Image 1 (cartoon, helix red, strand yellow):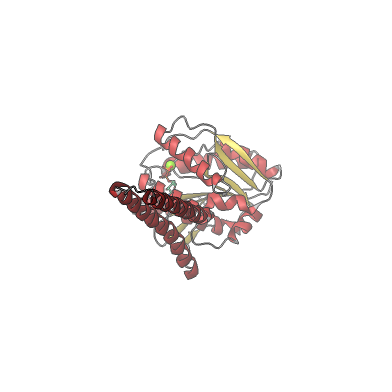
Image 2 (cartoon, helix red, strand yellow; image 1 turned 90 degrees about the horizontal axis):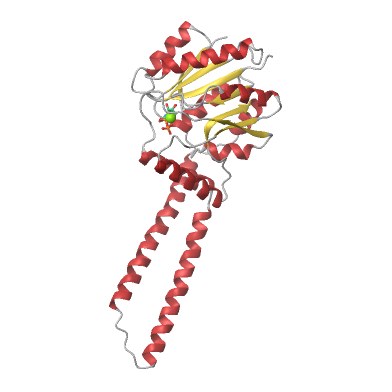
Length: 316
Ligand code: UDP
Ligand code: MG
């Protein structure tokens, strides 16, 4: 087969895992080439996302020793999603299919075979889906589940238990390049591309070495990013909530007037204070949500580049 595969791996401070990751990916590539499923021109493309350790040095060394490794060096840290996009957009014109994968070997390398098979069977997008979340802490499971539910409730189509381990054909990559938003949330955008899609199940392992680059704070902001860049429903719900509270306030007013007419004085200090606080809180919350969207509009209008590439190492 002459189909060129690029495995795109964003790396941020991954010097501890790179030697093992590169070894396993190379073995996988060679077995696929040996089986005649992909072309010899296939590459493993590491994207250095402005790492502060020796990640880029290692990538350059790997490339110098063996051209099966390509490298893309970003000018600074732009975050996982942008690094991934930079790699995919560089690979777009060089490959027939690209698989995106994390550097820490949490994504089972053996699922690549099934993805490539699905590509040959005519699929343009193959999602890697975790078969179970047993290895996760209860907290991570609970929050992840909640996140997917909220996303689907808000009308953003996401694939359950799918992170960023997926295969995209060249034309799917071309489709992806048409989405020009700066606030990028790939998981929500890829399902919008269309074409024939399917899933492949895999067991997600533990991080091979080093530590997670997604602490709780980043995870929460990632979730917020995902929701507000894909759905405007929160704005509508806030409007509805405001309306509901207004109705309740009117009802309370009518009730007070009726009581007053019947000769009862209302001793309502507590209730007044409570409603003032409740409404004040809701107003602030609403302003916050609306501000979130305005901030997004502000960023989109600038049309800033999502990443800048310093070097590309790729030779045939
Ligand atoms: N990553 C990146 N830029 C960042 C943060 C992370 O390119 O600013 C990469 C990281 O090197 C890894 C992938 O994104 O390949 C997923 O990160 P990690 O494994 O730390 O996240 P987790 O699996 O804990 O959610
Ligand atoms: Mg990880």
